[in-house]
Amino acid sequence: MKVLGIKEDSIVDGEGLRTVIYFAGCSHQCPGCHNPQSWQLHAGNDYTLEELLQRVCVNPLNDITFSGGDPFFQAKNIVPLAKALKQAGKNIWAYTGYTIEELLQRGKQHELELLEYVDVLVDGRFIEKEKDLSLTYRGSRNQRIIYLRTSVHSKNSQENPVISVL
Image 1 (tube, rainbow, N blue to C red):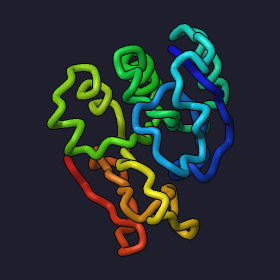
Image 2 (cartoon, rainbow, N blue to C red; image 1 turned 180 degrees about the horizontal axis):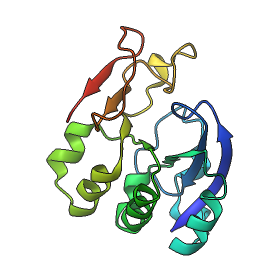
Image 3 (cartoon, helix red, strand yellow; image 1 turned 180 degrees about the vertical axis):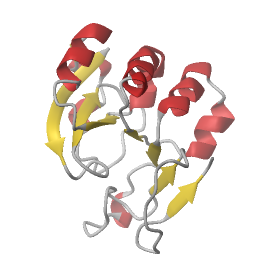
Image 4 (cartoon, helix red, strand yellow; image 1 turned 90 degrees about the vertical axis):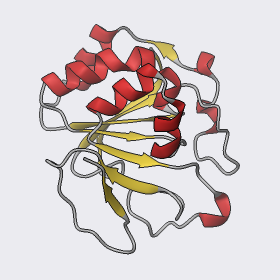
């Protein structure tokens, strides 16, 4: 897997204390993106599944966030990691420039498999004219927080639109 970086103890990339994995590669290339260095796949460092698991499971209290870039750009490689993290009891958030409708319509096997392990999906491209720094866990008003697993609970409000899918 190509990884740009790993940040431990984040409180802004999902609920609770999280370890964030920034995956390299993104085809959306949104104007105003806060992480344009993540667009190129070659910008990342190679990690094996075992190396990433050792690195991100050091703190048993932290849950996991997949960010980037766009983790769905490397879905085939990330699925085994997501499966192992779920087996370790981790809650997984993933950020993507795709909407969930786009991912479902694309019907790509590995993207759909990755969705099976994600508890919360923050979807939608970053739109600079929709940028709002007051939003929780997202950068622009068009982006949605989608709870894919019913075991995850959150308050529903207009400021923080929540969609329960399953």
